[in-house]
Image (tube, rainbow, N blue to C red; front, side, top):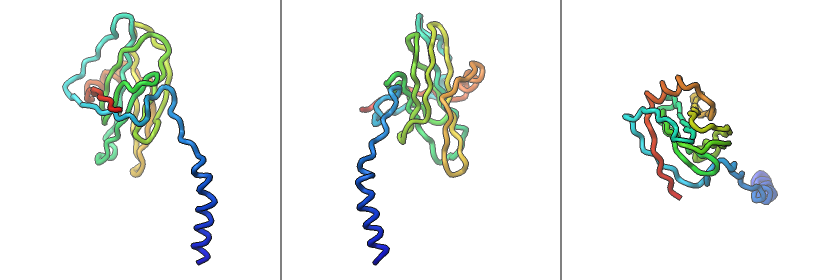
Length: 168
């Protein structure tokens, strides 16, 4: 009975503290965290498009590496507060952007994986990659990290292109 009383006391005294905690606000570079981003994969598209006239092009790659074959995580990619794409295992997409400072966000359904910012110039191409690793129990992410164009071209040649559908 003493154990039950102690448990009830701990619960009652800690519940006001729990209720006062505020949800962590997503960074401005992310879109609305509850938005559902769906993607289609196309394993036949491997073309590296040049930037549109006067704009820059950013390529995003997700190097899943085959860890935990029973679980395929999904990533949302945001630029300056808008979800612009999604990545599933070993996939890529690109986005044309205006020159200037860009703020990048990569997130799962559970929260932000990584952030980056860069200043892009019109007519140039940039490559960013997120990687997934496992220790056999947990899945870890790195990135988004800048990638060399040769490495990016190699991965784009092997990965599937994603197209996005955002549901609010």
